Length: 206
View 1 (tube, one colour):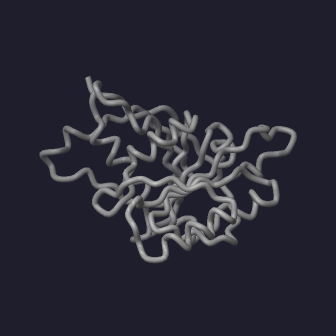
View 2: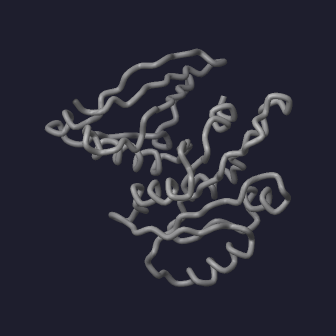
């Protein structure tokens, strides 16, 4: 299912935690070749301090002609060794964009603005938990008819198991702010194997 969903978007975004832990390829390789779209999604990594290894699959696939050039978003602030890491990643095939940080995290609105300027019109955010929460928080803050929506659809996959503290947790804040939380409209729920997959749409404020 994930690979079919990837094929419907211009780009796939993950944080550096997911990139380091899973070494993902962010492509559509599991779709049968006869049905596979010719256009690959662009891999996007949020990597404030440029920690992405040059031998990761994303860069290897690009160098071997099996994937698009990865785009990395990092902090516009200067950090020790950033210059060396930048040169190494550029030589390995990455494209680097610089955005400011807000409360220790890369600015999601600036990331989305740059992606739009680069021609990206649909973005699938795969994770991890910190990145997902950053986008959901932006969606909450932009809740209103005068502000463009940053998130329009959420796909929730529920597996029949407990994952403990490693799961994705989203907190809407204190009780008096509950009214600010975007309303969700159910689209569809389906059973896929042992997993339950639910799609919901975020409704804009009235």
